[in-house]
Length: 228
Image (tube, rainbow, N blue to C red; front, side, top):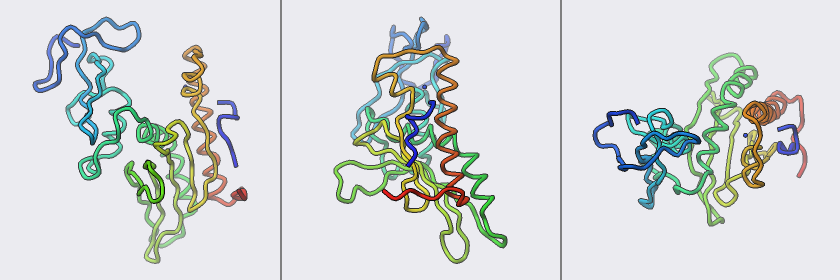
């Protein structure tokens, strides 16, 4: 099974009415001295994100300001957020699924279209969703792409992160785990290591490419799923 982290792997003067303005608090982006607003994220336990960001560094989703992590969660869950509740504010599982899935989305769609049989197969892309905990105490978060036709599901690809170990990205094709790894930027943060911006960008590209390439090889049967 591929283990990707072993491969070459990172306020304006006006404020929108109703936003959570924190008087005097500074934006938390590095080297930014602007005044910030509070991230609008509130999880299913009613715990709020307490970070603040200026207009240059917040991300707006549906007209509300969020930190980058929580913006990706809210956007990726879409309408499902109201039904299942937003994930814990301090757990990055859903955010990591959302960000990695967004980076490999085009290649996953392309390879599923490549293997789709002629005559009516449809690609369905699910939003980021929690999976039932079953026999575990924590939830897994997943984004999936499915190739379906009148007979049922033909092929399925999924990116998954478990809340219990929210640094490990896993990729599945159908029911098989085909690879997993810790993103290089998370590994560096754990070790307190910093790298130049260009190196970070290159390592991110390598990580995403490793995941996408593994998926492509298995979906097209150019590489067999290893026995675990």
